[in-house]
Length: 212
Image (tube, rainbow, N blue to C red; front, side, top):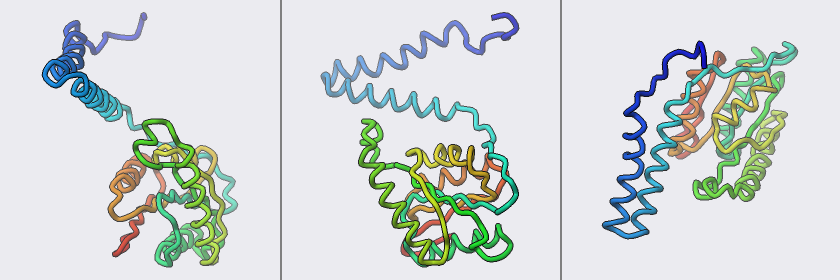
């Protein structure tokens, strides 16, 4: 295509890429049989997906325009908000945005339909969505018990994508990720969104020793 500029790919890139995909699979099949070949194919596919994700441009996340009526707080709940510490932390974040009582802020809770990794790979998200709905119901009840009126919905299994989807229609002034202490995926998602968002992003880790 005219004006597209020189391609970054060299003529020898394609043969090397093909060899890198085919050689491990063929070798594993020869020495370990079809099961080993299948395992090697899975590893190669996972590696390709990982490299593709790493190579994806990390552009700033867009936030919908608000009317300025009420400050809005987006909560990405990867675990239930049924602990007093969690509810108090959300209330504090809402109060900071409202510069007054927490009840003055508009809260949206999004529960990613994560489920198990196996279910995600098999695209069997029915149970995951059901579990997310149950988590959402518990979280909204917990916030209501703490005097916070919130609404909620189930989001994409990926917490980052769930955040991006919500911010397209919900003009939040702040985001809080809530997950278990040992859930590194939530911490990584919070760090990713924090780097790409121009509003405050907090990570609340719940467990034996909650960390805000």
